[in-house]
Length: 130
Image (cartoon, rainbow, N blue to C red; front, side, top):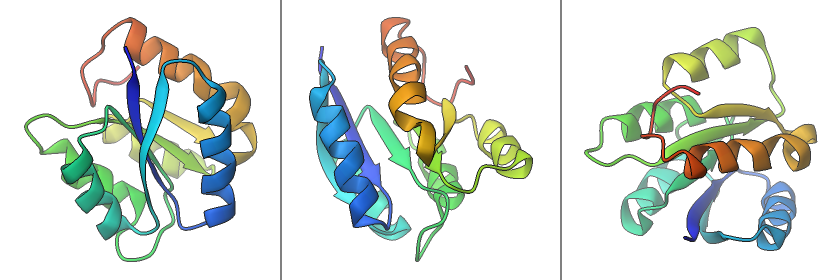
């Protein structure tokens, strides 16, 4: 099984780093990139990814707003927040939205693979807290 991933972050440098990392993980494929919230919603609708890696702080719509919109879709993707704004409030908001995880940008290499493995090996439904 190949896990289709959409990256949504306004930092091209960070998107490039995450993409290079994910290209090394077996069973993952980055199917698209978005650099603001509206583009993230549009591409998620077009590409139907299994997982969206969302920054919280983006232009147009922030990541929390994007997740809120996608949550109402008939078949929403899983969402994991990747953010440098790691706070109790953001983590609580992500959990309330049913995000599968919240990872600090500095820790994504260590923290992201176990989340992906848990999501797709256990076949959890999107927006089911783990």
